[in-house]
Amino acid sequence: MDYNDVFEEAVSFFQEKDWENASLTFIKALPLAPNDELKGICCFMNANSILEIVKISNDKELFAMMITSLRESADYGNEDALVYLKSMGFEYTPKNPSSSSAPNSGGSGGEWGMTSSSSAPQQKSSSSEWGMTSSSSAPQQQSTSTKPNKGKLKLEDGSVYEGDIVNGKPHGKGKKTFANGDVYEGDYVNGMGTGKGKKTYADGRVYEGDLDGGLAEGKGKMTFTDGAVYEGEFKYNGQHGKGKMTYSNGKVEEGKWQYGKFVG
Image 1 (cartoon, rainbow, N blue to C red):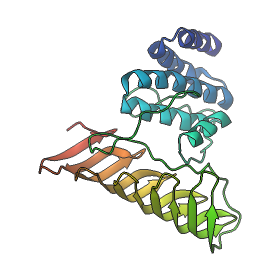
Image 2: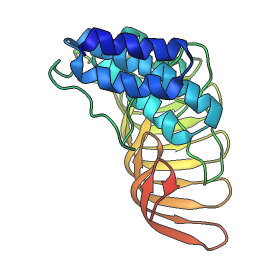
Image 3: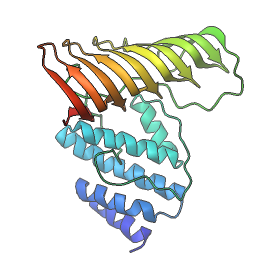
């Protein structure tokens, strides 16, 4: 079967609301797509099907897969994916891979996902839940000047930024107060929280460490509202990799984490 046949089969599963088979078939279609535009469409459609599964199961790992798929779709030039990421509160700059390198498929590392009408799983303040960032700046183009000026910006999403500004965008050191009460202070690159910083959430959680595109990504520390503290590796704003969680009752879980879950 060629790309068109597999893609049509995936769409038919999607129309029948057979979300799991739709996702699996979109994964099969992806490496067969002859150009970046079709790869982007394939990731984007698969995101729709995964989000429907997420709505039913409230599965945070699937939600992470959906975000991964949208980001990959944006990498392949799908502007709708960027619009949707922005609507969900994510900052992301497309990496524009070559058309010959399709995203990896399968496994728990996160793959595909998307929709235009449904809400994502809600964040929880408990240490046992894994939520996404509430940052909401749109992806930005790279600046042409590197000399920052100090200033203050009121952004379209209602947030207020104070700090270094290059070409009208946050770039350097700064502080952003979001409309929902979250506060981020630290490094910015081309309008996005990237580097090292501290984010204090309106619900009381505090994250300190590495960020990429507004997301906790790398090494850091999260203090939860229930008194638990996690120190270690993060991916897409959640515990992922090697890390240690110390709960308020003294219990300790140290080892490998996967999308917010301790796996040993």
